[in-house]
Length: 341
Image (tube, rainbow, N blue to C red; front, side):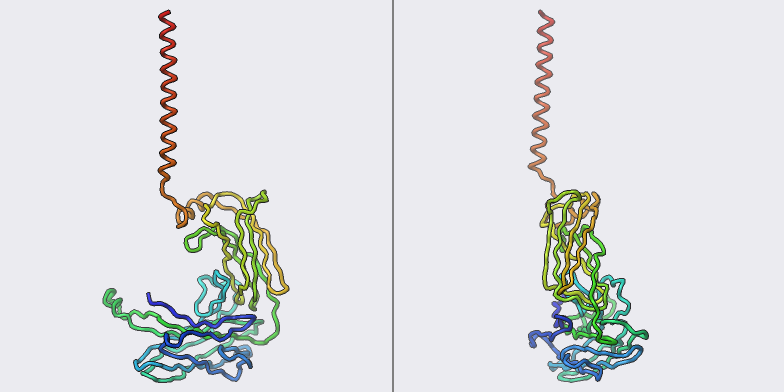
């Protein structure tokens, strides 16, 4: 699979800053052309404030830097929070948060694949359709602009036409609002469960931002104990995270190579953002079948037979059998001597 280069804008404090990369790795440039609704001061991403049930045209200028023709695909996405506590703008979440009312990717109409001749510059337009009803806060996402190429090897192997493979991408952030009135962020703990991250055992705590605003400079501290005990078994902490509006992510607490053991546990978690603080205490259960399944899949746990332990056990069993045999024989001998006397 081809290496993916993403030039992603990042949301720091509230809005995305300009992304960057080595220009020589790109075959094209992307420049956003801002509409009149653009908020002043936003220079590298679309940041528009519009009335409900209105349309806006977003424009991108694409410049082919090579002598060869290129094909460009433009796809809209709704921002979400990944497992690292980072906002993603160039992909869609595997699971949409239930608090999300309007998905930005469904409000933007993009053109089909754009073809650029060698050294050609072309401006393409996209239509943004605002929701009919007014909403608070922000809708956040991005436009992923990627170069696509025809994969003839897959065509020959599959015989099902040309396969398109993305090789390079540029992500331009899109922030949409009806007003710039401040919205107070709020968090909830949705779930706690045994899980795996990169085939390693973790306890996942699902943290949700159910408000239509960004949660910035997020700090999380978490610990896990057995129910009824004071000893901390596992703990994790992380700073400088961020959550997209109306999104959730699974905060991982690593077992550091330990096996899952069935039983009842208690999670204690505290999250902070600026002057805001949230705390939760949540009980959860790890079932025996869950523990066995996850332990088998953990790449840090050796699930192969412990032949040394098995050999030791067999030796002890044999030794006990020999001792038992000798005792029985000794009793028989004593009985025989008694009868002769």
